[in-house]
Image: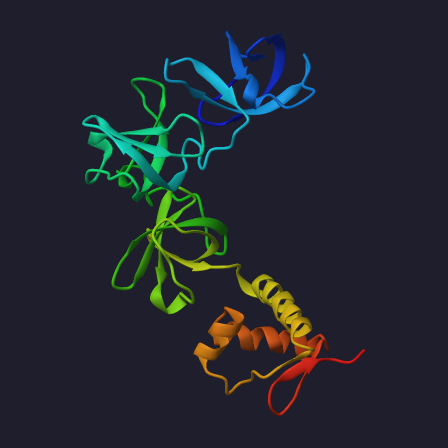
Length: 276
């Protein structure tokens, strides 16, 4: 079964002067010549993205758009008309946002957070700024400690509303933010806590898996600085964040773990790589 707006693995059925035709369920789908990999032959299977061209014909491409159906992404407007706007999403044909699907009139050159979806009336891919109707915490598909994909949605007094796996919303509190965040930023995080339908999220990985990842970073920084770093318990959180890109709490847990593994030793002014 082929899926419009997604990647499909399709077999080459026949060749033509202007491309190759791929096997669909009840039709042949054109992959234009400019997108056909070299040495492609009949019978080969190709991973292609399917969408409709300007004449409403189903067409394939080996280009990779910035998002597929269901994704929430930050895209730049390239043109606007009375009917709507067109966004650059990495394909030759721009993605349409109807005027009714815009929160404010889109301006070419500006970026907008949108959800890519398939319009029920036309069956074609489109985008909308009206994302809230696609998000719900009523029936959760995540649990505490789950790794999730996050998109920064909007800023509030307590932190940022984050979109979780393109389905739910959670809060990343200001106290857990250690780098600048812009609307539309994508990151990996995990579910810290769920209370009723309220979700708190954290950027990074839970528990010691995060510490181990940060440990590799600290060991790399030691190698790049002749095996010594002048940071310790008395270093300020700002100093730690500026140099290591992590909170002081994570820093202390990480170097403690490296010390237990006998990979570092402490000095009066910092720590250094342990001698073999």
